[in-house]
Length: 177
Image (cartoon, rainbow, N blue to C red; front, top):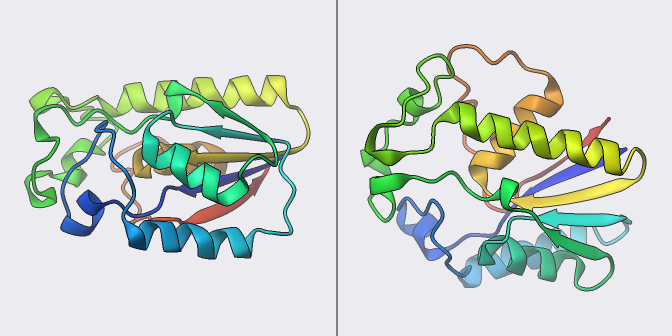
């Protein structure tokens, strides 16, 4: 099985460095251009299924990338991390290192604890491995589930801080399972 992870295209909140969390917002023109470029880069790839977050940024990204070529399946386990009271606030108000420390598992401000994000992403991976033991799966999601799924697919230890750099809009990676 090959799993391809994609982060959605840029939104205005991404551009303004604001915390979106589970807000349902559209991509901006830059995000749409990023998706068009990625569509060109993956045009020769054949996917059997596309799973995506039900938030509009992921749905719009998936539509641009693959249109109606394969079945697109929304899955709420791929939704962005709930950022609680920090949603809509400037990114600098969020101490990413504190909230990505697996051992601390902080939920100040009503932020979804990192353990919960890992649990739902692990549940999703188990589901698709059981349902599709072969084939090519495209997963369109947000930065937090992308980062989490990446850690799980690479088999990284879940200790200390799991922040391993920024994941650009419309980033994509393939993983062989």
